[in-house]
Length: 380
Image (tube, rainbow, N blue to C red; front, side, top):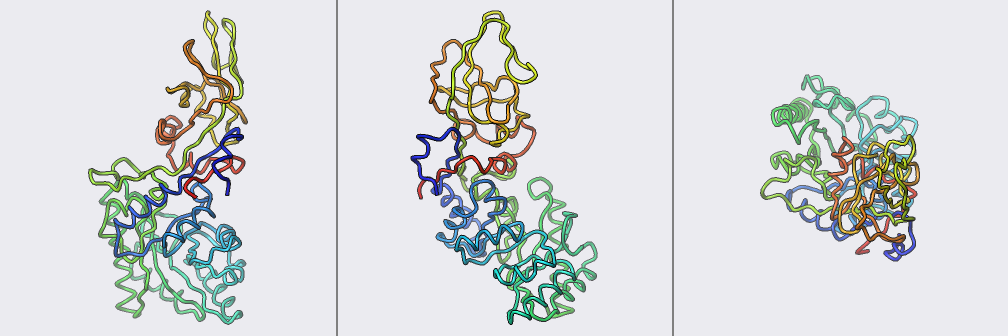
């Protein structure tokens, strides 16, 4: 874990506030006090660093952690994290033995994986915990639930295999931050298949879950046995509509910074950067060069479209973002020197604003911060 002193020497870095993470955890837990809490740490903890984030969540009392794939779960186990870990996404049947060895809970929705997992668990003298995944309208992965009776029959068959412990069942909403009617349709489908499993097959589950960030904030009726916030845990709302008048007051966990490498003065009509897409006028101008580029996670699409916070104001990215650097336009009154710190996103320039300029969402910009960018953990 890199300490705060790294800020004194690093070209570009991300500061991760574990204090803000704790605030968000407690706020979200307060939204669903009667439900278990699953902390989503997939995609390297949404770019924040999966292992340090997972460790803090375990300290805070999270009931479960979630990852996208077996490799992510294995990395947490290698780091000494023993808390329950649910693999939400696809796992190849050939990896069933490794999943059993690592004591990972797998999301299961195909006979091939269920059989492989049952056989691996039996050979090891264990029972493998599984959460059955139901596709209620995301059209991605899961037992298709447009016909609840057929879905119940298929899920029951998966659960009947020996050496499996069907602990949970879950679904994923496609538009809980935008379409109430469709979200309610998905929820109804999920409840229908649960009813079918109970009434016809006597099958119930200890952990039923469907609420990611948007549903945690928008639909208390859907909290069920466990909630699994992702982006909200890191201090960002899936959509402004989720904030509401009485929102939990989430605090962003990551801020991204870069240090001015050089300040340059140029004569009239000088072009700037690859492709000469920007050019100084007849009076010339100045730039600050920042050692951050698209290889660090600063999207190239932000070229000539966005800016950074430097010397007390927002200043524009001038020319194309390079692989390892970008240029920032300065006015004649700027008092910028090499070594000064620019905020790429953070308290003065929210990541949502950068995402809007890039035509994307905050999730992508957070996840895009490259591994070579050091994470500096505050409140550690």
